[in-house]
Image 1 (cartoon, one colour):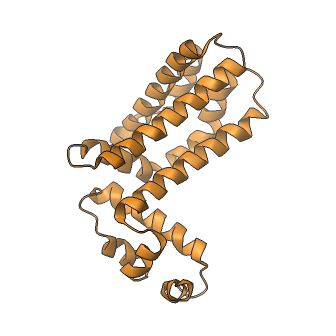
Image 2 (image 1 turned 135 degrees about the vertical axis):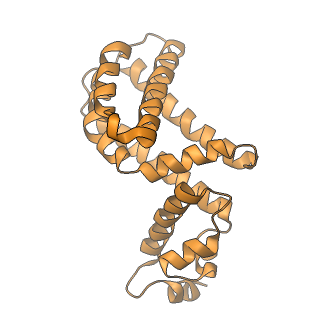
Length: 199
């Protein structure tokens, strides 16, 4: 089975590189054409592999979507855990996000367009897809809330969750505005003001 998959990869690419290429291409297709309208065959063609090779890496199209969302959660966990070593106060977290992570986030416009598309397709999306998005948001909220409690900004977890929800809403709204009207939206300025108002 491994030999078959390697035969489908581009010359010189490892299985991990091929997997990442599939994920990156899928995000781009889902963002531009929607999840429902994107075929696995189109993704495979853009990567330069067979459709069977995509299914070797991800059993189903929904499995590919889950891998994209799982990778997003892993990146989020890595960002937060890396910063826990250097954050000295609760206000640092928005400053760090607005300076470093926002640059990463803003370069991933396709990921946010894809997620927006999934929300808009919600009537037709499977319950599993909806649950994956919900899990991503809940994990982010819990990470931020835990940080606020650990750093002493909020005395209890309930208050910290409210603050984290407000922060997520602000970041999400700013990113949505950047997607819809990037030329006139300064996301960093919005987050700087949020730092003063929310945290």
